[in-house]
Image (cartoon, rainbow, N blue to C red; front, top):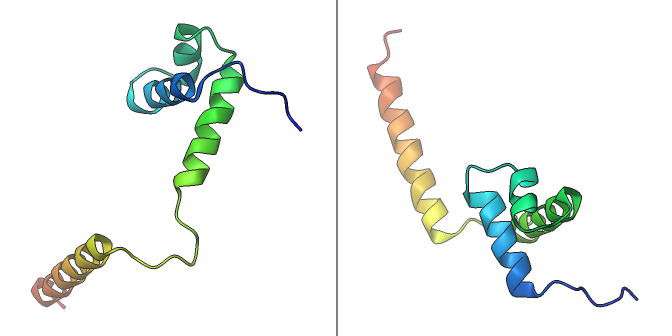
Length: 83
């Protein structure tokens, strides 16, 4: 079993959000938080993996609506293209 982390979940979350949402590189964000860049990079990778949908996941209602809009737009463009 791994030893308990010396970083709180709140600290990790803040560092991850800065790394993802700012224009800073992971190395720059890590320096700001006095972290090893590979530590922050690992946290970011784990965060992203936990939030990506399963490959066989169903579309959400919003995703289905957006897909329908795009299919409709594509179909209407096809009629406007010269043959």
